[in-house]
Image: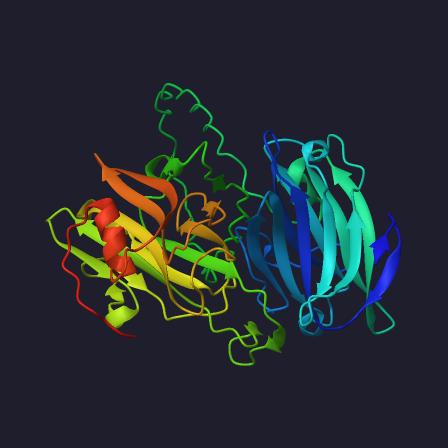
Length: 431
């Protein structure tokens, strides 16, 4: 259903996919979808803001699924289950922000609400008339007499995501300001003349001082780094991400029917999906030891002992909040020489051709790093995602997005080993 600005339409109280889409090209800014859950027009806390740095709401009602790029058509998607929205939430704002320019430079911008089970469009709002705006409220879900409706809004902001978020009560992390210069120290005063002694009564007993107030929650960070072909690398050291955990997530899109939400994990499940991707990592430590972290052969690694890399359990949904994940312990960064993160197709597909995937590296400290995979045009079963190298103590993340085609009888692992000169001996393995 095509909608005009200000119009509204009923939507089912069910799982919905909200798709922000546009056409990319030279000079076109990137864009990001976000959602805010409101009570009386404001968030209850910063936790009611769902976006690329905070991809899931605690209620499970909203999840950021991430970006896809298919032939120059880019989408950024939120999965919204209106049945799980808490009763006190009155409005769910659906917003977009641009990165690297204004929305007037973003062609064919739209927001579309789809039935997540069937994939059928429920509502669509095209081209809100953008010019110099860098953020937009494109639409909103709101309650009316126990049912949900969607309204096409089209309200622009020239102050970007920060201005939009602040307008709804979000506390945004601001750049650190230089500390003020210390005040000059005055010369000590001469000692006072001695005074006659006087009686001083003993102090009265005091009650215990009140406990100090709880520290305010950390403000929301809006910074991020997007790697592209033109700008493929970034220094973790310069971003401040040299300690704590580095979480690496691979998520993808499988065009299968939606069967609902898992009651155990609170996440979407796909019907008839047999696609199984495996996130893996080749590592080389500074002591010369080499190895692989992967589900095959139950080589899940370890976080607090070599190789300081740990792989989570296997996942087949591709959702951003789950997907395939591994963690690198940057508290032991000096132990690493290089780490190659790659993905293999274990079963369910013959190549990455119809798979739209994205990668996010989220350091505990510093901005998250994200990139999409290029469209695959070869019969590839293995893709090198990112290479992390330790160069003189500087950790560099390099976007690879490189599809490899194994020779007949050669495993995907051996193929990526040969391409990057790891020099390991391989034997057959099973999950």
